[in-house]
Length: 207
Image 1 (cartoon, rainbow, N blue to C red):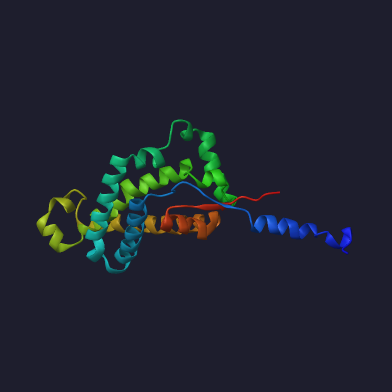
Image 2: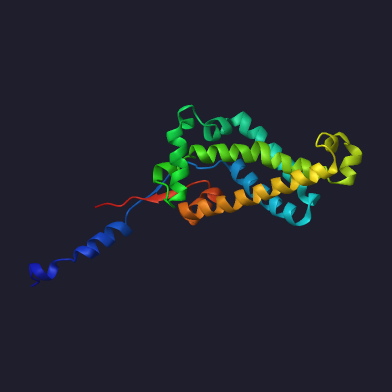
């Protein structure tokens, strides 16, 4: 006959069991299908552009246009990227800057949305840097210039287009490096999985 002492289970085993059997909660979709597809296509095109020049440019242009038109019609930019008036306060800006500098991992609540620094950065990249790098890149192509001479004239000539293209490319590379670093800080597997499957799964621990 077993005694009470022999039937007792170590506390550590109970805790481990409760954590391992905790249900996995799947949050609402983090990214739409279109956002995920265009994100990876543009990423691949960007690397191709760095290596080959304008030979992958038209794929990037068409994908970017599809993303921009869809974002306007679905309200993606307004709901997910456009910061509110309260987000533009100095306190919100300083907090969004200080946390990455302290290498502080974002909370679960923060993982479901972009902070103000991310919103402003993404809007600047989407509507300024990326269109500019495509434009200046095409302005360096003799075939494109012969068909659309005004494209290089508006930039001040081929030399100005080349200079602008260089600095914008450097800015995009720096953005990519910082972006990957922030993804790693927030959890590379979860963030990458969210951009592939659209969802982020979290595990609730029961005491």
